[in-house]
Image (tube, rainbow, N blue to C red; front, side, top):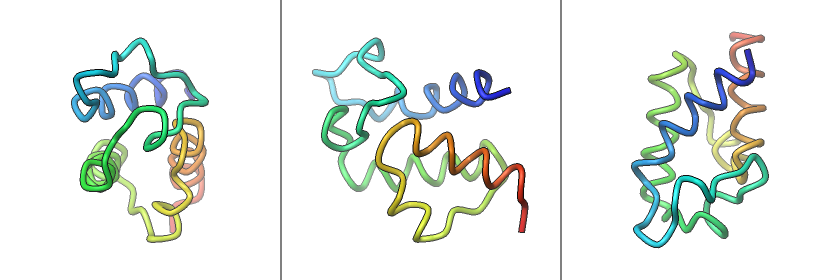
Length: 84
């Protein structure tokens, strides 16, 4: 199931990558801002897209902790496994 989430998350991130970053540059360890050069406005768009795609609600704390692709996956899985 995590592989499906990863694939879905990559599809969400790809449109927000700057021109100098390729989708092949994305790894689970990629830092969204520092390595993938996603700006803060696009990071908010990604969070909103994640909420819509996974039917979850991200709190401010979740967004603050969403630094890497793996962080995002862990937050998604946590929200899906423990709905509030």
